Image (tube, rainbow, N blue to C red; front, side, top):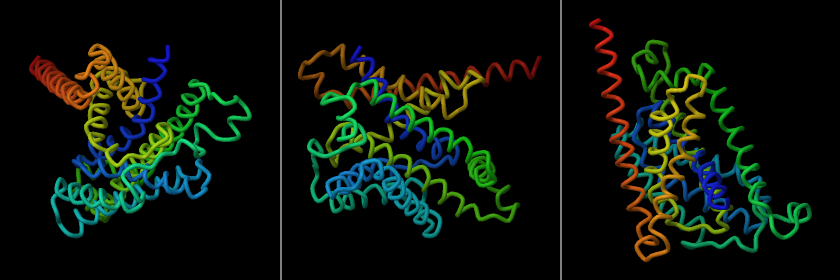
Length: 304
């Protein structure tokens, strides 16, 4: 039971990351590598704020704003400096490594003796010393649902429609007398804000900030989005944001099961990234094959 609850908990945390990657990958069609730096940025900012006495719940909007600043920087490098999308993300990711170290003060900041959104004096008075895992999942579910609803509502606004138009038809945005560059910057800011928020919650759940926590987060986000669209996106009743979150939980379940089969062996403890990469490759291949089948089916219907 604990194994299943841990999968759901991790899936919800990375579901917030997946929502951010969904904006860049699916909506903007922008390969944003700065995600690997924005995720630990959220953890670094949260760790500093908490160790300096800030209420842990207030770190959520603060880290979101910090992530927005990182995303806006990527957008400015791409739009104003005319640097290619892939390279602008690499520039930001590289710079954020040093920024995260400067913010946190070290590459590792423990939070075991600090209050977090999951463990604090108010919750201890309510539940005692041991906070039940179901409460952590319930709290995460509330946060994820709020973010999902806000994102869905935003995408229905004029600004949200422009954001989607930039990825599908940039000429349309220009025809509407809007600056597509500014729309891109806004989209990247919102995306990285969500990613940093995910990193903030991850650090508080793990009760430690580690500079290497962002390694491979883009792969996790992409895999969650692809799974969400490939396996859950076909259900018309599900919104794309819901499918992405479910994709994150499914992906974490796949990784957890794969690592469980290796047991507690030396290989199992060292092969986490290898298993993640292998699963991502399999998911990519499945996604490509599904697209081929859809195109063939569509072509057959057209000719008939």
